[in-house]
Image (cartoon, rainbow, N blue to C red):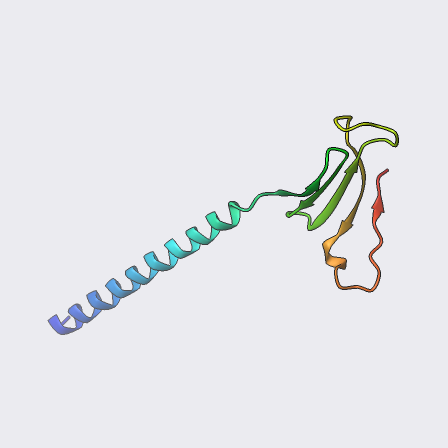
Length: 97
């Protein structure tokens, strides 16, 4: 093999290795950013109600105390809606079972 061909192969191998490292770092960085997103976000609360988004399931969850209760009582699951329905003329919540 001639010296010029060998040098050209080294240059091509070096470029391929450099691109592999750059793309590998970019992919790893994208995974850590996605993993950093919280599973739940509290949208609103007043001590008697709680509205939470479940980012993994793409849903909004509703919790409330029993009627006649006071702030600080146990919050009970009341229902949920799918965020996939946003934009539709009517969104029907799923009631708790």
